[in-house]
Length: 406
Ligand code: ATP
Ligand code: MG
Image (cartoon, rainbow, N blue to C red; front, side, top):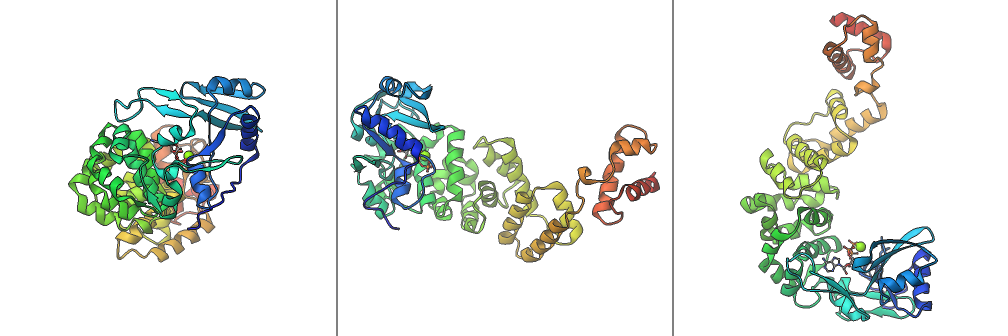
């Protein structure tokens, strides 16, 4: 990886404008965290976090000519609308004591950038850059970037005890950035894994989704199976099966639903649902993972009628995920054959849903069918006949077919 020694970040105009207001008013202003890390690695940052020695009140004053959203004032965050974009600026902060392994009991502001950097989780996330004053690296973040290492700022045990989520974040960054975890940080993760039980499922899920899509997911999930076992009892009880599945994850498209489903392949329905419930995701994610796991262990026909039935029930993403998972787990599944047949059907765009059927329920009533559940049944029969090529999808043919069924 090429680390940019003389960082010259490509800063969007809305951010530059905010920085110049801070500078011309006598304050400091730095880009900090992920955006600096990513720029140093030659990647384009996806968002920009700004930090300053100006207090929230001072920011309100110097940005009085701008539209301001005051949502995070208590935590030092002011959102300035600059060139139509929302730009968040946070006052340098020191976190107070952590009483619950989750969040500080209070935050206070400081005028000292280094103090703000010292509360950040990992050295590679504790870099700050100002186009006026250059790069600030007080914890060896640049060297750790060069050596591709995730390392806590300060003493790992203390940092994980302050906020247990950092354990998941370390694993997530290692997976996504393809970095090693520094030996003392790694040791501390294993030793403090119980702290994850204090962390909300939603926060863990946010990190876990990114982790499973990362380059190092297979390796990390196996090396830290004991840590994941704290979050998921299903992992603690079936570590070998879980690790065997993890080893195959890199062959699955990096979409979290697909990756999680592949990780749970072969587990019973109750275990799959139980695992997902530990993350408290939306019901769509639970149902999709669950359906993928169930169908992945059943035959998946490549003939056009089986493919059409698949299309009638599932989305394109679902079918592709299913083929992906079956491809690594079912030795007799002919993935290429299935995909060729599926792609041919997509081009044909056959009628596979009631919506696409050339008649509606009202047509049936007009044709003399009594209102009620029978209408739905006949519509479904007709759809099956069309899917199976027993009837063409024209109004006359479908009505004719239905009459033959009465
Ligand atoms: P991403 O590319 O995922 O956005 P990021 O480094 O920007 O990566 P964020 O979660 O957006 O990660 O957090 C922004 C910055 O805030 C981090 O780089 C880090 O400096 C700091 N940070 C975030 N969460 C924590 C935490 N739990 N403990 C300490 N510092 C944190
Ligand atoms: Mg970020």
